[in-house]
Length: 500
Image (cartoon, rainbow, N blue to C red; front, side, top):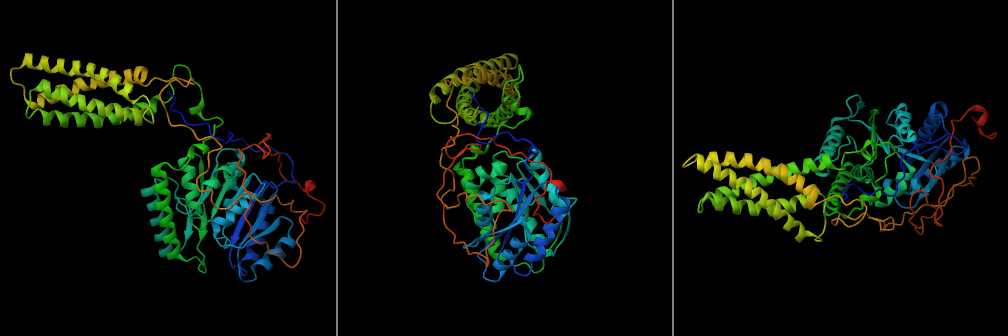
């Protein structure tokens, strides 16, 4: 029976090859709402830093979340002045909505975002995106809670941040250290498959995206950052915390009920040792051993409890047979589901029948041990009986695992004749949380080709028809190369109209 995960729809990670210097490799999105004061110095500082330090072509996208002040006009002026800056306006608020919309429309292979206050030191930007460019990781996040991070902020925000991440670890088993740091990046091929699964459109967007990615087995790279709190932040802490807790409950419920098709995010990792075919090493053996040991310990405790209970009104042989029978049925059911990954009712009766045959072997071992003990001692103590039964059960457990793996739940390979396992979601399976109208937008022209009419254009927010395709597949069903040809920007490669 196959127990490995579905290959999914994501291609193997690869280093982005050098190629066309005109195409942006990195698209940094700055979501803003009523930031007329901070927007211009933020964008200019970021643009100067990227021009000076980033070795590839880049773009800075200002995502205006329905601002009511002069933020749209400031964004338009910046976009008209700086060739690598573009502006986009949404008529509905929500940081998650802005990121999803702009990331879905971008053609850059690496997508990032940062807060407009630039609280994070920009020297961490290149370490953030480098693992994504090299193909090492799928997502990257800045962490203010890493040991080597240097953070300046008040005790209130420090307490809230650490408490929130403790809640994520306790409720959603999150292993990343900082969910809400406004400094993240993702590969575009991952975003195309992951974003339709993310429901939140506000501040919980980051957390939900990271939890789903982590549960799907995607690699998240963490970068320690230097961070200085913005005392003029307009974030409403109480309302944001309440929305975040609601999001934790919703995602936790979805994970518990299995309604998230996370297997569609699985990728054939390029050089992962878990995917290597090694002779004489059965797949999934280590995981099955761990699962079988856990089930075995619980079954043994259950068996000893039943034996002590039945021993109150019956002899040792009868009590042993009854306790072993009940615990064997429970053991077979637990191993079927947890150790060997068999789902559904198909073959359950046959598995239980084979499990009872294995139970007969265990019964012979334990009964024979009790008979030998009674022959050696007229009236053995109860503790002595339990010790003999534990030793006999250990021997029976080893034999039970071998018989389960080779006979009851054998690996049928690809023939499809084995036991029913969890079916993989086909790429055409409807995605979780795709009711919101966030489809890819029409491609924008390159920065040096884009025209910016004055005054700043007000783009109405309109839903777009959605066509779900697999990574690397065009909408017409044809296949295209999944990576772009990129190369570092050199002075003689720039466009004549480029002011750099």
